Length: 283
Image 1 (cartoon, rainbow, N blue to C red):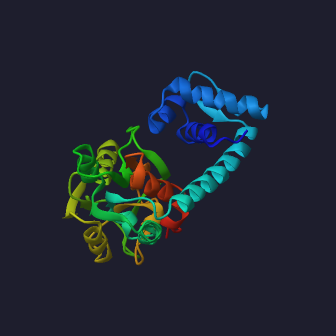
Image 2 (cartoon, rainbow, N blue to C red):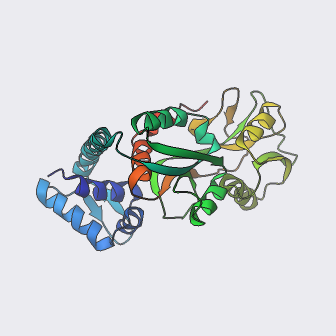
Image 3 (cartoon, helix red, strand yellow):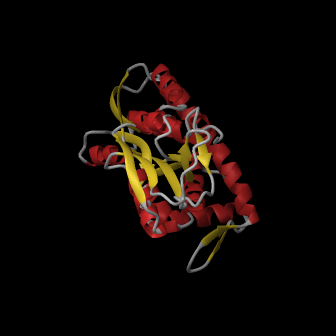
């Protein structure tokens, strides 16, 4: 019943809320994904999804199956890594956005290099938008970064709210333009903030533009203004701002994208199963 190939398609449909999006994520035809889910439903004798023309929703049995699927696929990935450890060779050009590198990613990379001593890992740290461009140009084999809203490419690792952060005690004046601290273009969060400000009709002024996340964090710690940030990656010394007339920024999704073979496949599988190590509770 619990064949990994079937579970992988089922999990993708459940997490992406659709068969088309799941097929794009997995690099399969939609009919293939549908066939996998149908076979899984036949194997367990239960209906796993409620479907109509507008949405795909898990049934109670589907919710239970999703938990089993994650456990089985995690075990499958760990087994594959165990029995291929030390056998992988070559060079892996890996790009990561700075905000995830400042959290749990170093430990994951340490585990990967220890298990694969013959893989030459070349790490590039940068903004998500720039990393996507480098992957498309063939300059990276794999990236772990934010995904632009509406972009179907990549395999989701986790999704969470994008929040406003500032130094404790900082209170934006609603009568004044909002002082913004943003990453320089091509930043995905920068674009999201400016779109939100335009929709809300809120006046703003740019008080700091930095090419690095550490520069944004430093400006926020100095009390220059407010900045956008993934909720679970808020740096120490900064807090989230709720209400205060600030426009909602929606959600941000972190994905792995790139080659599905060799060292790139092994590292992407390790990242996907280690999402909890990459986050911490938001302030």
